[in-house]
Length: 233
Ligand code: SF4
Image 1: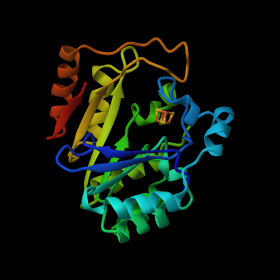
Image 2 (image 1 turned 30 degrees about the vertical axis):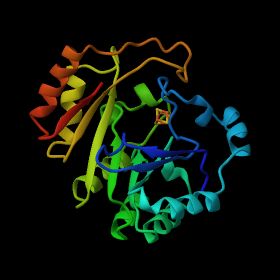
Image 3 (image 1 turned 135 degrees about the vertical axis):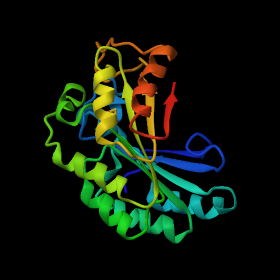
Image 4 (image 1 turned 135 degrees about the horizontal axis):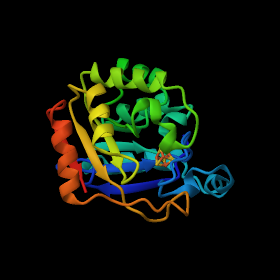
């Protein structure tokens, strides 16, 4: 497993329980607003690969911190690009930790396999835009099928999960949020995350954040389709 960084103590993921968060390098998307291009762009990744954290050191840390930590959160950039993700989750679960996975939904196969083997306790999946218009924001051509399949896998799973969209002025509007909400309708949870402009992958990315009032309007739209809609401002 390629581990580029570890946050050893976090209450952000689950405020009532302590998590360790690990970050894996590389992503199949190229979102202009991405805050960490050094972990995404091939030419910059070379430096990251030179300084990876040893998996053994990470598992030693987990052994020592068992008394404090409950969760291991596996975040990307895009963790499903890691070939040994299944084995990695298996090892974490063997230590009796709960596992949260962040993904953009690119690989429904691995999601299915992990769920079938009870290796996940929570999934957070990004929905960047209307599925047929993903390329407006991720800047690569995609086949929408796997993403739709991942949405269905989450909706039919029996663990907790969330869908989430980082919303950006002039890229998202009320109609787009309504369309996204329609095809995740009935989901357990949907988070609307406000965009923050800093250190963007595209240095010219100058789109803006929404105001709280505008975010509330989006929430009201999503509320029609999903019971648990929240704003992350
Ligand atoms: S924002 Fe997320 S999905 Fe987009 S390029 Fe960055 S890490 Fe990948």
